Image (cartoon, rainbow over all chains, first blue to last red; front, top):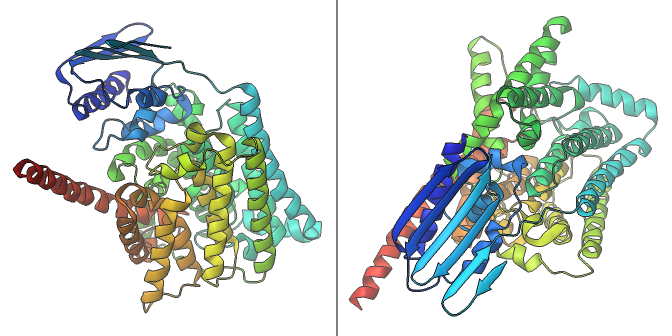
Length: 112
Length: 442
């Protein structure tokens, strides 16, 4: 899977997270650089999503090249469960989650 | 890492790579396992008998069900499994791959299937094909090694072409190897894409992919007049020895896991809460120790299942148990696997065609745990239905590939998951919408 397709899948997964937490007015930014790509997704919500620390834990999964190229097809399909955020974690190098009511934002970076 | 007050919150990932000591420990555990197999093999019979058994294994067409214990000898089957697993472990170590759930599943599948179809001769070309694919797409082979190891499910095709179609060896060896390399080349992209077919609800994804390839290959050969038929060569004389081996292995595995886990059962609860859907890596969730204990418990459950079924242990059943134990680092645990075992057992009991003690039925039960994510995610009732459907399908799909796909059960579970998952999602979605509407009316 090419990097652009991976970016699309990652956005799909993050967007689903936003939808499932009733976050509105969503804006998405994608930036491809020589080192890799950055995705930022921002929305508005009055309440902090209650599973944030668990999401961070899943995104903290170490990057693992040995399995990502095989299982990356599972990202961004019908099911969006814990396992998929774990897969997302092993495909990215860094993530930032910020909440400053009502602004909620997730930024991710994936090295080439 | 995190800053939090009443208004704002900022979190940042802090990815920690596994330390070298932990990584090496996992490799030592796997290498130790290989040595146990080799030592059992070497000391179980005189060397002359062992090597003649090895020669029969290497030169057999190896399609399902060829029990290497019956075809070769007890010792040669263990040495074959130990050597092939050891080579796979050393290959992974050379490629500096971290030992994770998928890798343990792949290595134990290699080990298990080396009791009934994989050998040193027929597994190598698929790995070479994987290497070529990595060169073509200009990526490191380490990214494809898991698929290549699982892909040796199709190794009987290489053996069949070399030793099963009566061609002189001077032609049949290059033919077998060329076809094997081609299979190794096409497997990585295919296996990855086919995950979307069952959406990660069948753990043996390469089994399904291999079934499709073997089905086409068998169709082509049959079209030109070759007959490819399954076999039923299974041993009956080693039940007690195999039973002791399995119980010894799983008790040892549990004890090692318990000590690695600082003499605690911590982590097993976290494992049991997961659905098992791909990808659920227990090493990442609960650590090496808890994963080993889970593998051991699953192993003991499966041994118990064979005893309840009153079957005679043989190479394929031992191989199936080892494979499912491997997947107990990557999706299977007691709670999501038990409904499948119960369902297959009851279906066979209920059917007028099957007997619960038949090797194929026991294999269907053990390998049927590939559908554990259905029980884990949708609940026990649907897990029972999945087991029923799997038992009804598994013996029918074997004709399609003539036994040239070692993961016949994985082929069947792929179909079952692909049919059940969209339907269940639909039903549950409708139920959810109705509940929501009822709440609003209330």
